[in-house]
Image 1 (cartoon, rainbow, N blue to C red):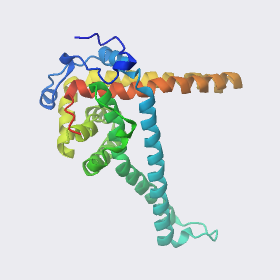
Image 2 (tube, rainbow, N blue to C red):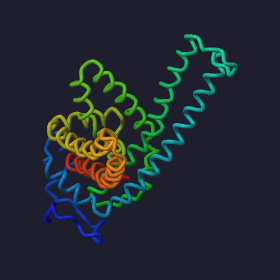
Image 3 (tube, rainbow, N blue to C red):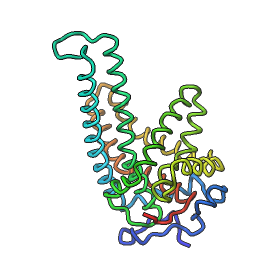
Length: 281
């Protein structure tokens, strides 16, 4: 068994295999029979970040380009339909009435939902880059585009979870936070295990709740790391010093070049430890 704390050499990037004792299966994950420790996950993810940064950033570039295109088309189409259906929104300078304002708000909601639906495969692709890296499989940047064939269950899950978690946060923060963590493995379960939407949600909840605080701890630490990166920008902003601000921006860009791939791989390592990896797609 290799030392999980030792960074693999660049030439062995694709041959890296996670320690056998940390692999699991869907059934074992649901029963809570998996090994998961925050320190080990983060240490292994940091080691796996070496040799993976460029690929993941190229994947992110593809993600954002497609995301921007989808958002633009969705917004343009929604605005066009709204203008045609609402006379109060003409270009003659007439102020819109309350119905027109309602149409604008409804249009914004529709655009958001359309974007959530159409970009759900992109989210799955980004998460699967982390899962594949953690499993020692190929993870080319085009992985981001490989899950549009699963758009129906991914879209259903994304919409439902966005609405349910949002309501949970509105009512009380704790229910929303619990659901956000408990359902966090739903999308890769659909992408990698090819589960249906409902089964993926239930499987994620059943497995994650067995060690909810450990999963929460991993995500919490990742959040702290990524928030800490922007602190120099705030220091430069409030100090009024352009030199400090410039240093803060430069530091943030360099740090995020490491921490974003690290976070994606840490998510993938967490998923792999809970559910394993079967390479179905």
